[in-house]
Length: 412
Image (cartoon, rainbow, N blue to C red; front, side, top):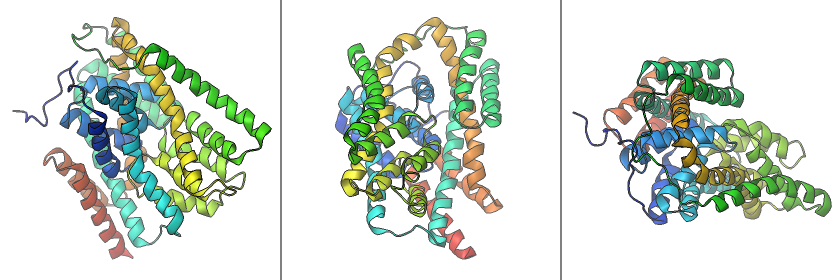
């Protein structure tokens, strides 16, 4: 017998509409407890919003993940934004989700920019290592749960394995995009059986006109500020342009954006290499999206604007392109995904998402965290706590972080 907490969400159904306040509180909890980078965040989202709260079904959630894999920007924030739009009744719900998920890490990194000189030593290293082990457990849970739902038969399991192989041997954003494309083509060939499920629509309260405006704004902001920098010689506009382009031109999010950010702020001399690396170390120890590293950089850049103003400009600029893109696609997404051929393609891409998650479970999650038998043991304990004992994720995060600190201090 499957307990209610573990029962699969019935396809085509989700919880009724809520309010932006409810969305804010749900994502604030995630923003305070989601460690481990974008792949791990997707696992936290699935556990909290698909399994526990039932805001959306498994297939709809996987469709959103597949959509955001195609788009540049921070993957986890891009998935969270439409979930907020869906549950909160529109743009206000999406903004509530983004604000609540982003705010905790942004404030922590702003505080670090003002007060902390470095994030080093055995305690800091142990904390970061413990959080990486949490990510192993979270991603493993997500891979297993999504594999049972989205790759339950031979064709889709084979697609998942093919996507895993592509992302293993073609590392980086190119491999992920190619894996999604492979899943779509393979789905058209292998997954045509079955009709569109009744009630399987995923309708977002976003008009086509609003979607077109958002897509047009994305393109304008990619060009106009860059032109204005040469005309106005404004450091504020240059700062916005640098971070907007970093957010707009990166696929995969998370750590992938770091080379772009380094080129944007270190190469022109706005931030020293040592200051950049210190902030990156701090970003590993906070929950929420890694893109909030921009908050720290915006606060420490020279010349002004910096401080709170610079942090606000950098934070808004790096997230804005991803939000505009996903919001612009929402009114057209359901019409596409409910066509028969599109359903076959989506079955394939959903299976490919499982393969991509499986690849990420190994690299970077596993290889960066599990280096000794005790690491494997601690990650296994965290996994059992999450999947068998159904412990709240924040408790697992806290216990694993403490264990990481104890182990690091004992070795020092």
